[in-house]
Image (cartoon, rainbow, N blue to C red; front, side):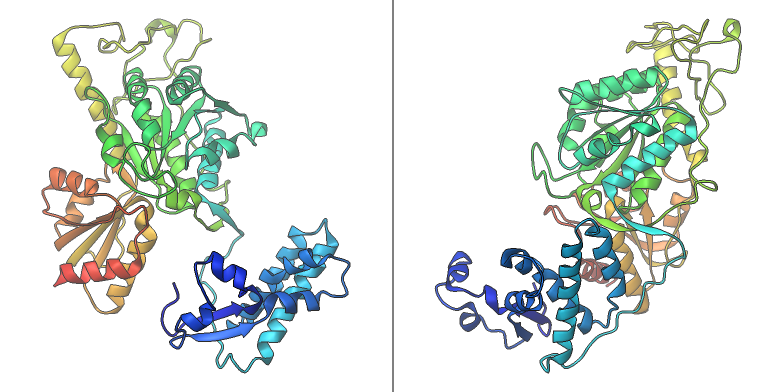
Length: 514
């Protein structure tokens, strides 16, 4: 909805009796609704667009379709924007259909010219250019960025990439995108159900591929047993959970962060797993690469959490220089000769090596039964079972040595520390930025590495009087942090299937500040 004092551009051609009835009005909406609090610009946009294109060899229906560019031209005048980038986009988009390129170009220019003659527009606005690093940018959404991050991880590791998946909203686009890239050694398999999807990925990992499976909350529930199987196998596997509103079928097209505890603990037995989360659409590339790196370098399943908001949302993404970054992942292949090698012998970080079928002399047992220390033979020994549970947990926690320290936005100490994670970064970042401009001693700690957490997280908490955790659930991260660090954090929570608004966060944080 438009705030009071805002500008509304009306296409008067659309205000017909039939359209009014479809919208639920019994009369003229312009007479029924009070628009005195708004700047209203009335224009016969459809008629004017058709008139501007009268000399082109197009039917009237096709001409009328160009009205959006006419309205865009009006808006460009209001905000003092140059037409050139959009004109280039039109030529690129409609290059194979010159008449459509000409029609949309003409409509855009006509709309701007019309707005320039209107006395109804008293003022224009100037929006400063974004202050961003120099480089080549493109628009990218979260699911596409996730897919590309996995492709680059496989290239950096020198492995084929395999996705075993079952379509589910809002994760299906990752499967669709990866299926386009067979030229990069990508293999995709659309399984008959969620369980088959992850089990094929486990098989691909055993065979030496960078393997992944994708889903959302209901599918992750079905994959739980196989996730535990991959954990006890100690095979690299990435499980992507594009979170949506739950429980059960819930709100398939809405966003939420309510699968955190499920991904942390939703398996039988002591089944520790690395968990990471992407913060923005473009960050999905980085975190898909990171999830793959951690899985391969620590020989363990890794859960990557995104959500429907950033999966389908888009932002400008600076193309990385792959000669300088995202170009190296170490793969834990056996270095000992076969006679001296043990399948579950470990390094100082409790990581075993990865022997794949076809390596002569490195044959070994693999299964879901408990394994004897080092050999991997089946073992029911009580002390061995306890030892193995500790080892698998220690292996996950030692991954903290292989992740960056936690960054802080703002001062290192203050009155309030805002904690957020995953796809809420944009709103929490802007809310904290606004409060700091007003003079409040507020800082932001946005978590992307969730299990294990960065080594300096606890020390950060000690420097703030209050901690508030903002998340799109009923307090799952707050529960983890209070249990782990005993910090007495408060929560600001929302479970409406909607992302945070900056304004609501500012108000909540001010209340916490007192």
